[in-house]
Image (cartoon, rainbow, N blue to C red; front, top):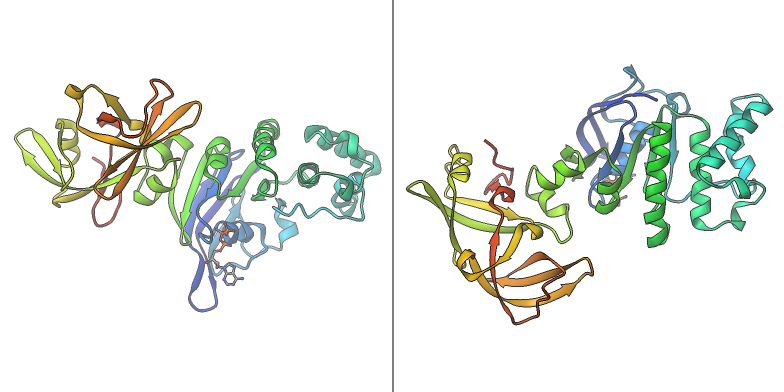
Amino acid sequence: MATLELINLSKRYGKSVWGAKDISLKVDNGEFIVFLGPSGCGKTTTLRMIAGLEEVTEGTILIDNNDVTYLEPRKREVSMVFQSYAVWPHMTVYENIAFPLKLRKLPEKEIDNIVQEVSEMVKIQEYLKRYPRQLSGGQRQRVALARALAVKPKIFLMDEPLSNLDAKLRIKMRTELKAIHNKTGATTIFVTHDQSEALSMADRIVIMKDGNIEQVGTPDEVYFDSENVFVAGFIGTPPTNFFRMNIKNEGDKIVFYNEELKFSLSDKIKQLLKNYNKDEIILGIRPESFKIVSKDEAIFSRDILVVEPQGSHQIIAIEIGEQIIKIVSPSFPKYSSGETIHISFDEERVMLFDIETEKRIRE
Ligand SMILES: Nc1ncnc2c1ncn2[C@@H]1O[C@H](COP(=O)(O)OP(=O)(O)OP(=O)(O)O)[C@@H](O)[C@H]1O
């Protein structure tokens, strides 16, 4: 178990392509960190630099406060699990797990103990004599996991380890992986582009875009307290609804308006905007922050465009100008398309962003 620190870490491919730019991050001992972001944002590049599989262009990597930036991979004491399992086909499950331990010249008895221990942990004890081709994808991934666990690495690096599994198994393995992490307490960096995987597994999520870190925070922080428009739009299904609004002061209220909507918000919002001197703003409202209310309480009313029942809740789409807005509402009462609904929203949950920088406006 170990701490990890990345200091201004960058990777440039050729002259101008940045795989990762100026990444700084401190990871505590035992933390489960998830790198999340769209394809090509630099998750894998950063992970591979930590593993020593990718040369660093600039910056420093510290493991337990030791500089490992130029240390060869096997001396870093990290284990990596890949999407493609990468188990050796000509070895049995037992041999796959034991092989790295044999390389380390551990006594047979100790190797056997470790193989039993980790195979029990990932629930593959009964397959130890089989070859990988005799296993399902999920079982093969467990073998890869067991092999990585067996060497008791300081840091666990996982690159989309669940993405080759079918949807149901993925969700099951998520829970199991998290349980294994709780048991081993190993510092883990897990790469995914699946936000639901990230939200359900991470202690903290590192949200990346174009090689940069956009926000680092707990699942609740990145969801409820998004740092900018990109994060608010990336996290959440359906994502945050955004409105470009004009703003003006009217007495103790602040009025938000555009061609479609007009409403005023309270003192608290006015206070929040006291140093904001632009007359346009981006308002972000999460689908579940809207409320369907009586006509008297409504901020605006619209006809329903489409209802998408989800079992546990329903997603209601309305049109505001040319924009489609999604509202998450409890399963009951049922609504149907064409019906007029009256809508309000939870002012406490509104997110305000600078019209130019798209950064969150904070007090
Ligand atoms: N060997 C390479 N040569 C040139 N450019 C590369 C190389 N490897 C990665 N890149 C570029 O670096 C950027 C980051 O790639 P990276 O693989 O880290 O993204 P990612 O976030 O892991 O994406 P994905 O989710 O698709 O795996 C991309 O623009 C990619 O095209």
